[in-house]
Amino acid sequence: MAQQQYKTLRAGFWIVLVVFLAWDHWASPRVDLRFEAPLIAAGSGQAAQGGHCSMPAGK
Image 1 (cartoon, rainbow, N blue to C red):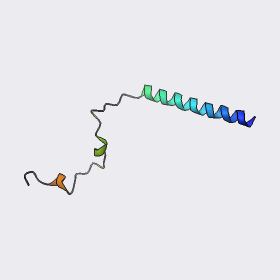
Image 2 (cartoon, rainbow, N blue to C red):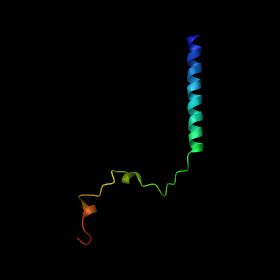
Image 3 (cartoon, rainbow, N blue to C red):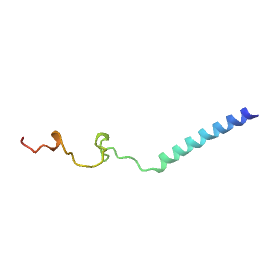
Image 4 (cartoon, rainbow, N blue to C red):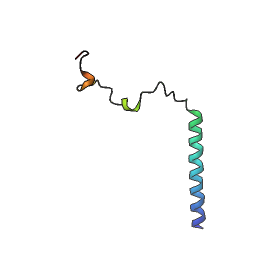
Protein backbone atom coordinates (compact mmCIF):
# COMPACT_ATOMS: atom_id res chain seq x y z
CA MET A 1 0.00 0.00 0.00
CA ALA A 2 2.75 2.44 0.91
CA GLN A 3 4.65 1.65 -2.29
CA GLN A 4 1.61 2.49 -4.45
CA GLN A 5 1.03 5.75 -2.54
CA TYR A 6 4.69 6.69 -3.01
CA LYS A 7 4.47 6.11 -6.77
CA THR A 8 1.26 8.13 -7.00
CA LEU A 9 2.73 11.05 -5.05
CA ARG A 10 5.90 10.99 -7.12
CA ALA A 11 3.97 10.95 -10.40
CA GLY A 12 1.71 13.74 -9.13
CA PHE A 13 4.70 15.86 -8.21
CA TRP A 14 6.27 15.53 -11.67
CA ILE A 15 2.98 16.20 -13.43
CA VAL A 16 2.39 19.35 -11.37
CA LEU A 17 5.97 20.50 -11.97
CA VAL A 18 5.79 19.98 -15.74
CA VAL A 19 2.40 21.72 -15.94
CA PHE A 20 3.74 24.66 -13.92
CA LEU A 21 6.84 25.00 -16.11
CA ALA A 22 4.72 24.83 -19.28
CA TRP A 23 2.35 27.49 -17.92
CA ASP A 24 5.26 29.71 -16.86
CA HIS A 25 6.87 29.42 -20.30
CA TRP A 26 3.55 30.20 -22.00
CA ALA A 27 2.61 33.13 -19.70
CA SER A 28 6.02 34.86 -19.57
CA PRO A 29 7.07 37.46 -22.13
CA ARG A 30 9.70 36.33 -24.61
CA VAL A 31 13.30 37.10 -23.66
CA ASP A 32 14.97 39.53 -26.06
CA LEU A 33 18.55 38.28 -26.16
CA ARG A 34 19.70 41.39 -28.04
CA PHE A 35 18.45 43.63 -25.22
CA GLU A 36 19.92 41.59 -22.36
CA ALA A 37 23.37 42.47 -21.10
CA PRO A 38 25.99 39.77 -21.65
CA LEU A 39 26.51 37.55 -18.61
CA ILE A 40 30.08 38.81 -18.25
CA ALA A 41 28.67 42.32 -17.67
CA ALA A 42 26.20 41.20 -15.00
CA GLY A 43 27.96 42.82 -12.06
CA SER A 44 27.31 45.47 -9.48
CA GLY A 45 27.05 48.28 -12.01
CA GLN A 46 30.00 50.10 -10.48
CA ALA A 47 32.49 51.73 -12.84
CA ALA A 48 35.90 50.09 -13.16
CA GLN A 49 38.44 51.52 -10.72
CA GLY A 50 41.63 50.01 -12.07
CA GLY A 51 43.23 48.17 -14.93
CA HIS A 52 43.13 48.93 -18.62
CA CYS A 53 39.38 49.69 -18.58
CA SER A 54 39.87 52.89 -16.56
CA MET A 55 42.98 54.12 -18.37
CA PRO A 56 42.46 57.48 -20.12
CA ALA A 57 42.35 57.31 -23.91
CA GLY A 58 45.64 57.79 -25.74
CA LYS A 59 47.94 56.45 -23.03
